[in-house]
Image 1 (spheres, helix red, strand yellow):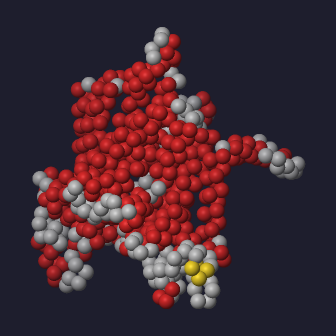
Image 2 (cartoon, one colour):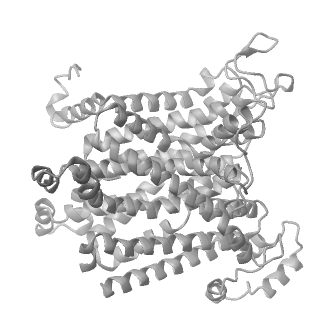
Image 3 (cartoon, chains in turn brown, red):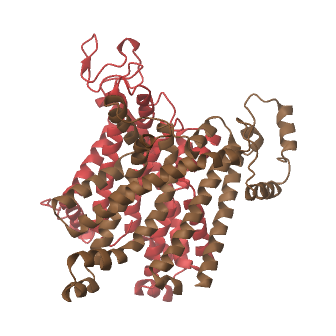
Length: 305
Length: 301
């Protein structure tokens, strides 16, 4: 158990190191970070000075070392656009992104798990067909189109829900539904197939044979065993949600990290882009570390590995 | 299937061809898979035949005819079945032409990531050890990034163009392929025919390419199909954010971005390109699901 834990934590640290390297490397894609960071109309002297002042004339790994040292302390440099520390800008908007992702995940779980279970238990009935078709559509629908269609119906046509901003709970409905649909579809399909697999196992037949009623068989015996892949996908889906927030926040003008990053890319404000990419990735890595630790509770066999 | 196999071809192709036909028959017996196949075929044919079937030039502007509702005619009596956009361009023509960048990016990116992932999966799965460890850690790093965010950050630096988009999506989508191929190789390398080849003194390259790769192709193909759906959505998302193929080339995502601006006056602008994406992606997903269920129902992708 301790060995597993230590290995898992070490792996996560390694991944974070890799992430920091890629985030740093973004600036070097064109070969010259100074040209990426400076406005297009900067003079040659300006660029030369900038290079010297910011250490871009040093060897690559010295620069990376400095970047990493800064990143570990939450220092990604100043935002070119706002003149504030880039990391602070990202952290200010983190709660909004968490709120939206959390709401989307909550919607997804509340809809998907019952739908998936019902679909599996009532296999090949009308309930199953409807849930399967909805899940399939949800998985094929582009988030940004769904968002626009929801705005068209609920904000423009019926004037029922606000199409942008954050504040009241009404503001959250459309973005959360938009962001959550894909995840809902994924988890529904996974729950259904997981439950179907488990319901065919010998121990379920045994439970039924010894006279356990249907509800406890489904809820206690089957769901517990189908839960592991569901928990895995929830961890992974959080990545989808954090990434999807880039699009959803842009559509609904939701003041989170996703929208901040898109604006930062438009403004060529790369310190903010780096801080945002790093922070979101680190969040994802930490959540998945937590999910893996949760497994050891759900499935004690994993501890033996 | 009632197709008659020519007797001449039966001599050398006999073991191959019927197997292929049997597979196709099994696949098309699934109504959803058949539907997906038909949808895919229609979209592909439409994109290829765009210059001949499109009723208008997709980039020709006519400001006197802007924001016409679906079904309206211009003064010359020509019908705009899906209406026109804010620059008076025919929407149907743009939806038809929009299939080109979507499919091109989808296909090219899938080929790149498929080849990379196949190579990584074969290497890691066959040799194991530190090679496998390194590749799997690289996979973890890749997966740690919110995909769209990383893609737009990189494209923001490099500048948006067809090539950049294909390469960025292609290079950063290899992990799924690597994982399924690796898992297949793990079980294949213990099989008798592989061990026999090794015992006969075949070099590793030959064992991997001749004996393992053909058998790992099935899961790879399923992943490639389903991944194409994902790539098409990503291409549209990038165009939607203005970081895709640049105007005036019509892209479904770009049209959606225009439509969003006119959402309160011209509903058709955002509706139809989105429907095009939905139908295309749905078709590919249905076909991919059918492919998986026919080839290997236990495959979890």
